[in-house]
Length: 378
Ligand SMILES: [Zn+2]
Ligand SMILES: [Zn+2]
Image (cartoon, rainbow, N blue to C red; front, side):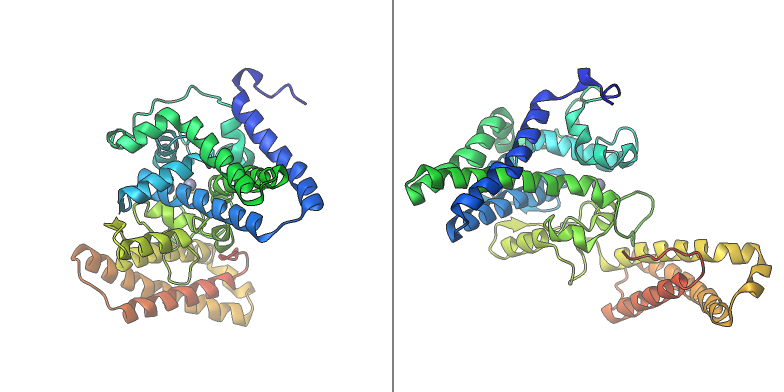
């Protein structure tokens, strides 16, 4: 059973850390809760630490440092540098270097968490086994100019240990004045929180390339999933993110759950963030139109190649097929008009774009009624 495990490539420190924190969360945490219960202080500290370290990864490591999708003043940078380290996901330089390679080589061999190597590999396997030599950090030269990033690189493990474990334990002791209180804060805000935030991040590399729909592009495996967005601070809209990686938003639609976007936007209103980068609505719609046209083309192909198939369809499906042919033409016209507008930088009215979007949705719903066509949304 173990003969396929490359023991000479095992990252022992990572394995022991991930294994011990998981084991503690599954044994000592329930034991503590059973014996001492959960009061509002422990719950609040746990929640604060989840949000502070989780957002430091999504807002800081990811959207600020990896993609430079906005600018931030030093209080924000300092906060995400300290609490990002406390998420125990290595330094900003390491994290961003891996992440930039992930975008550049997505689904290919040089993608550090290539989903084609399997769900487990993309989730955590790539951290447990280093199958290839670590590539040099040659794609983060811009970040090396930031003294805060360089300082964090030097002391990242110490900062992680102090901010991630010592501070919550000390706060627990200060509040309760007992070792049980300190232990509870260590177990909940320290250990259990680390496991939750780490696996939420890992799910972006695994599940967000596995479950959900692909409204913007099927050129890569990334997917949009509202469900994944719920516990990844909005990073679940991963299909959009891979298509438009420099946009500070992942959930681009107003109703999509993206607390990282809301935080960046709110901080911009009090002057702590600026230069929020956004892709224009017309460009986004153009991507949606391109993808919808490709899907319709795939769905209609069997009927175009074999006209005799049509006779075997029920009357209802034949009507759907007629509607789809008409819609295909209409979407083509819209595509060329929009493409020209984008190139000429002509703004299109919001109501016109919403109308086109409604047509795309209705057409895709018709498409799903054809036999053999997979449902598009999860
Ligand atoms: Zn990805
Ligand atoms: Zn990214």
